Structure formats: structure tokens, C-alpha cells
Image 1 (tube, rainbow, N blue to C red):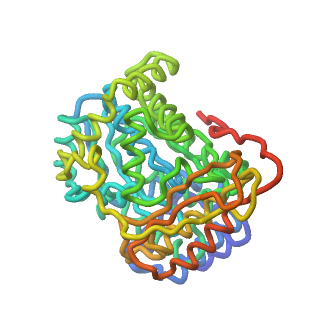
Image 2: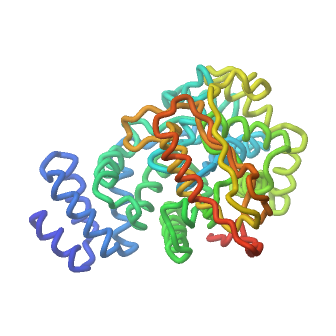
Length: 434
């Protein structure tokens, strides 16, 4: 069948067969299907969606487009954690070391910042010398010795996904539930995992703005994983305000260090502990989820997770002393305060605006080719629900260049909503799927 026929059928809401999806993706990889036709297909999927069978076929096709990592030589159950993207979300730097210190093997395949959302690789690379370009052999050896490694997606891992994502990024089709699900799960299934804990963000700072969309995404990814005989569960978590107080790469490493020393923000600590507990349970280290929660809490209090992150930083070429001496991390040379225009209660802090402002001063990237400034970012001084006085500091922007500083400050000012009444407290963990 001609490519245009497949595009038209999907445009009209029809379900394609697995062999048709394979033919389409393979044709794109072989150069027989041009970018403009694949872009049209992606837009048709964005508007019409996909049936579960189509998503499974797309995931399998992208998974098989490259190398499938074999970690069978590494003893233990391999469990990863993945977030769909948020602002101030540094839980991978906290939950993974906690789980690894409890005995879970954690091959953490991470991504980079794009737009207003942060990326784990960028945070780690703010640590001088830290390498994320490990080979599969190097990653396997580190998993044997440390139980944890952080690495980026190699070109050999689900290359079809990399090609499709580049098109999605420039055609406005990134926030599509079936495309997100197949993208995430193709990479994770190619990584030789036994289990996966998903953090599906919902709210102003997430790709999914509505909880019903986040639930559908979570259910779809859990179903894909289970059909592949993997232990997968998902938390749906609130991303209407930034997680923790720090937004920006080196700043978030600092906050992760404080959290692993049991001195971090309450919301970040609670979510990291729950993610770590579910990794521990999925890794069959604990018999019950409650026992796993106790293990995660113990590893936080006794410093095991903190020591594990130090061990991994050293193993991957970084200086572990950065977790004790923040002056060894990149530091900004300027700070700009944003003050409250009036007294009242902080009713909301728009996470997307905070992320946009951080990106404007260099903490993120508009395109994959942009350079990230690891030193810059934003530190919140208050969270939603707190009372503020007129003129009090809402947050501080830390910068190394005044380019876009005024625009970023205006965006931040608009992010804070001040009202006369305290807003109802939001739940952080909204649902569990799987």
C-alpha cells in the first residue's frame, strides 16, 4: 500500500495493522518515506490517536530498529525510573542512589533538557568531569561494581525513536499520548530492564495538562511493559508548581545532595522516597511495598544513598566532593530578586513559566543544538500555600549573562499568583497505575 494511503486512513481515524506500521517505519529508516510524509502521519496520529494494538506495534518496531542491550551477565534485578518531564525534577539523582544502596541494580538511561523541562544528563554534566557517554560494556561493569550508572541514549538504542522524535519536536506533535508512550517504552525495553517505575507528570509544567490524559498515558505504558513481561508501575504526580526549590542544573545537584542528607524540601523528599520504594519493591529486594518504604527511609537517614551517589560520581569521572563543597560546581556571578507586589497568600506558582524563565537565562535549550549554562537557574523562596508580605522575596534568578534577564524576570513575576485567601493544598501523588 502507498504511504499516502496509510496517512489518509490514519487521518480519517482508521486503525492500521501491525505490518502496515512496520512497513511505514522501516520505509522511513530506509529513506523511502520522506520527512514530509512521516510528519503528516505524526500529525494524523496527534489528532486521531492510536489503538493499543497500533501503539504496541510501533513500540516493537522502534525497539527492534537498533541494539537490544543484554544485561543478563549482571547479577540482580534491573530496574529503571523514568519521568515524563517537569520543572525542578531532580528525583533521578535521589531515588536511584537510594534504590541502588538497597540492592537494586539501576541502569539509569536519561535524557536532556528541551524547552521548559529539565534533563538528568545536563544536571549530572554540571559536575566537572562527569561522563555520561559510557559504552554498554563500561555500563555493565559499573553496574556490577556500583549497582548504578547514569548514561545517555546511544545512537544504537532505538534509533527509529530518535529519528521520529526529531520530527515531532519541530512539527508540534510531542504531546501525543501514543507517541510519548511508544517513544519512552521502546527505549526502556531496549535497555534490558526487568522493571520500570514511571513518574507521569500532570499540570502546567508537564506535557500532560489534564489528569485524564496522564492516566491514559500511564495505563498505556504499563500495558506495553506487561505485554513484554516487565514489572511496570506508574505514579501520576502534580507538576503545577516546580518540585523542590531549585531549578537549574548545578543548583539542582546541590538540592539533591541536601535531600540525600535528609535536609531537602518536603515535596521532593516525599516523592523521591516513594519512587525509590517502588524501585526497591519492583527489584524484589523487599517483600512488600511497606517494607520497601522503610528500606528507602533508612537509606536516606543513614546516608547510604548519599554515599552511593558519591561512589557513582567518582566512577564516572566526576569529583564526588561537589556534594560537600558546592563551590566546586559552576556558580553564577549575578543574582536578581523578584519581590511580591502585595501581601497575601501564594495561590499558585506556574511551573511552565518558571521553567521558561530558567531556559531564557541559559538553564535549558530551545533546540537540541543549544548550549546549556550549568551555573544559572532559579531558587524559589516560597511555595504555594505560604503567606508573603509586600516586598518580600519570592525567588532569585542566578545568571552569568544579562541577556534575556529582564524578559525572564517578567515571566517569573507572572508565574506567581498572590491572593487574599490560602489555596487548598494540592496532593503531590495523585494516582498509582499498575
